[in-house]
Image 1 (spheres, rainbow, N blue to C red):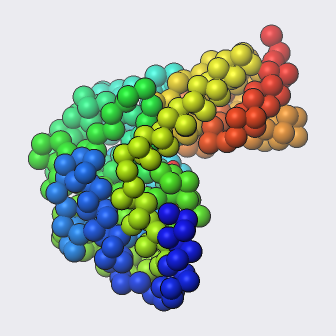
Image 2 (image 1 turned 30 degrees about the vertical axis):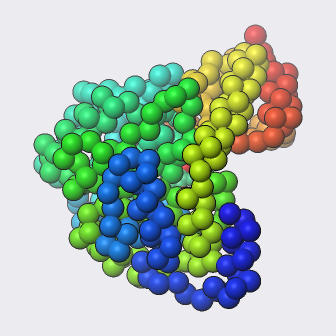
Image 3 (image 1 turned 90 degrees about the vertical axis):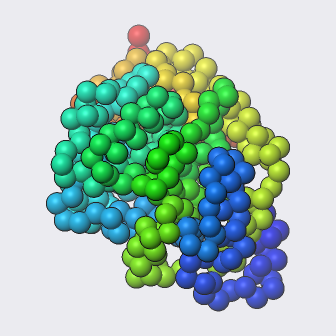
Length: 343
Ligand SMILES: *Cc1c(COP(=O)(O)O)cnc(C)c1O
């Protein structure tokens, strides 16, 4: 895949690509949706290439949400969601996923919906919790979206990074949902190429056309030569995808046991490359202060989970750590954290 990017640059593919994306990548995305999920997708009308998933999310929310419309999402949420909903003039309505199991709370999810719900913005596998939504949870989200005639926008950038056989179910595959779902993903997380910023959105042709109209004036196009390389990457064999997930699963196990050995309660993630741990046993009473001091105290960086929340109290002492690192780095970080233990 890296060679394909070099070759694309060397062969002169360095000008603006076509607005919707290069044809090879549009076809590769459609083929990927069919191969992994059985979702028949027309590459010419139902796929749009974007500057990462971030632009796909922004262009989609800006296309669908009118000022005053409500957007339902789970918190903690990926940080761009709140900003993007605000840019569209939308109103964020959330349902909290709580440590340590982060299960969907049906009552609070129902309460987040109203007659003004326009979009449900769903991320699975979920950053920052590492949660992979179960089919039953997705069915609940789907039924509420139908009941309120809302669009569903799914952020599936970690679709291939799942562990322990956990099944990633794209919401668009549930009965009746394809026609009201825009599915977003990206090459960044799957292929460890976050700097390339190649993402895409797929869904019903009219909705994708609306997203394209917004994208036209955000960036128009991006990542020309890298689009050709990602087309190659998406076509790689099943063993490549399986290898990515299993090497990350081993790193997850390593960090989870290291954090536990350091005295922390840990939520074991079924996807992504993040793990959430409770830093209270290390003396944290507020994860924001704790994380701010951690680089100097231990040479370790974590992110306070409260920054992904509207309700900071839902995550007072919780910290997100990443395990997409060399084994020695993970081991050393855990050793240093263990030295902070207070009790
Ligand atoms: C990293 C990430 C993104 C952004 O993806 P890009 O392709 O880099 O823009 C979007 N959503 C979630 C949940 C992420 O973790």
